[in-house]
Amino acid sequence: MGKTNIGKIAKALGAKRRGRVDARSGYFGALELLAEVQKRFRVPPTGGRASDASLTVQRQIALQERTYKQLVTVAARLSKATGKAIGPLQIGTVLLERAAEQLDDADLAKLLAAG
Image 1: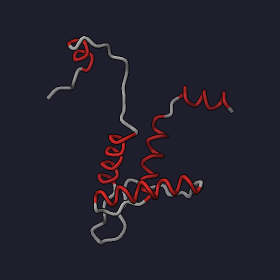
Image 2 (image 1 turned 90 degrees about the vertical axis):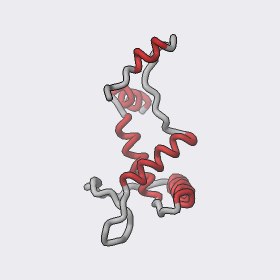
Image 3 (image 1 turned 60 degrees about the horizontal axis):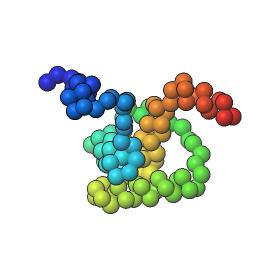
Image 4 (image 1 turned 45 degrees about the vertical axis):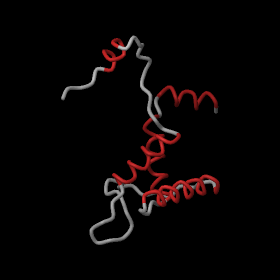
């Protein structure tokens, strides 16, 4: 199956292509986050905590209490919904990676200008 031509589809529908939209928040964003955590974090054959073998750098980061509590809340809700243990820092890892991947030169320029 070939690559989908979004421009051709938009033209056929009488629409204009305005750019890319990613589901990152709300219900669908939560489903996407859950799917990524479930795909990446696997329990090793010998048992123990689910982990992602591709994570090779480990560092401690400081979090505000409210941020950690929010991660705990999200992890608890996802764990309850799936019946699988999901840790707050597993959620945090995925969210941090997504945010870092989305930064571009324009974003960095805005941060420098604001500082």
